[in-house]
Image (cartoon, rainbow, N blue to C red; front, top):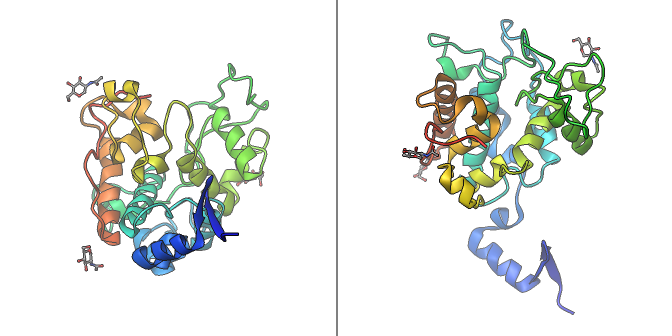
Length: 275
Ligand SMILES: *[C@@H]1O[C@H](CO)[C@@H](O)[C@H](O)[C@H]1NC(C)=O
Ligand SMILES: *[C@@H]1O[C@H](CO)[C@@H](O)[C@H](O)[C@H]1NC(C)=O
Ligand SMILES: *[C@@H]1O[C@H](CO)[C@@H](O)[C@H](O)[C@H]1NC(C)=O
């Protein structure tokens, strides 16, 4: 009997796995914790102001909650070469920074030092209840406004996120702004989970996205701009120059520099159609 390590349905003989490990280095072949890519010092140098008294999320987005949540998503930051992994993590941190930013043009340390300042949407315009969605029906009186690092919103996102993570997103959406581990898990759930017809943000950033003919016709080319399209393309993409898109890019450029990786092409989504 040949001892094997399983990669999905493909069985790799142990000797082959060991030779791959010798070429790539065991860390790349086996994966290693996010805390290696993002040590606590680095996390704190990225989010310089998250615990300022001016930030409503002061004390909420702890390093340990980020690391704990990442443990539930074993492919996050573990797919590809070290620079691919760093680039994915930088892109994730950039997108959640824009979603929760407290920065402004002349802010101390610059506009891109103020990620993770907010934990819930301020003065939401609606309850974000899509009552036509029967699979994830809204609970009376509940608001599915933006909460947590990715500002998850709408009943049809809270429902499946809660089911995957282990909380009742429809009757208890508030927990996303009260429990730091759950908050980060909603952001990683959104990042890792493809929602038809969209690819996952993860697939795009690690180079596993395969555009369909419809994607090609819509200029949905791989890159950070496509991730922005997945997150909020309906409002931000295909409209030429956009301040919100530029804010996301500004964060990504700062973080890519901190991680010492290149951002790659297609940073914006100005000529992409949304999904
Ligand atoms: C979350 O916190 C808010 C106030 O910050 C409170 O009203 C609400 O009951 C809390 N919900 C949960 C599920 O802990
Ligand atoms: C795709 O990009 C090209 C070049 O920028 C533009 O002319 C075209 O209108 C775009 N197509 C769509 C569907 O947005
Ligand atoms: C950054 O990356 C370049 C190219 O991979 C490398 O030569 C350089 O040593 C790295 N710098 C740091 C500070 O890691």
